[in-house]
Image (cartoon, rainbow, N blue to C red; front, side, top):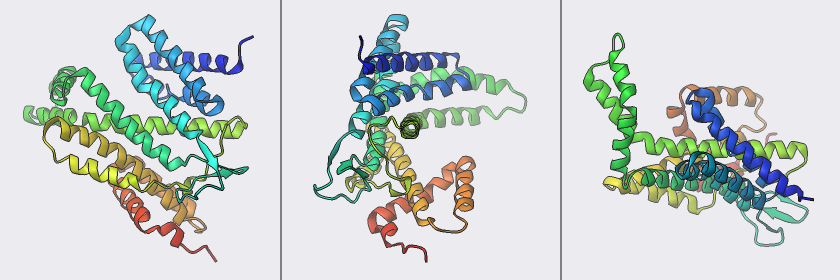
Length: 321
């Protein structure tokens, strides 16, 4: 009789593959299904181990290889297969509590300290940037080639825009096209990073509520990053000054890491408002502003995260009277 983890891995892989294939329609529902493709693999990895997630990823990739060919299999391995396996492996790492203490908010249970969630967020951002760069270089030998290819793919959309009543001037449409093509690599890493973190969070939450998870999770307000994360962000930001492909790659890493720091800023805000009588209302209003003014609202979050990492303002906060 087959072991339970084998059955779970196969089911997770088939489900992930079906979700990924469901996105071929190209509409909003299809995109939503693509973003959820890694969710079954995270459930398998966090609930039954990284080997189970790896089995599911292999099943998904082999299925795509047989049905759609090697290019589709390569893409699905990058987009939905690698991250759940790697992050599940990291998430299940642990050490005895008696070892050297950490200031990264790691959760402990029955004498065991688990891999800090903050490191998972940082590694998710880095992995999303690496996978985005791999996809870019696979589709073109450099960023310029990738942008040229994307421009050709998007050209029918902009041609259709030019035919609409009261359409913008030709130079405005061309400028919009150039902007979209230029920011697409960084945007890709942000979307990849956010969807991966959401899927990992959803999988962990469901497993925790059903009692099937292999590890406990710390409260969101305790999220903390390792000290080296700020140096990685700084190096990536400086790298954006480089010309050509290197500068574009640096932007990909900077965008993903800035998203990670925005999430850390949210955790800091949750901690600072703990015990406040209007906590729910204030957090609700801020999340609403993120929904409609995300490009502006993330800036104070990133700054708040950087200040907290430098001066540890959460620990300085006095408990409510």
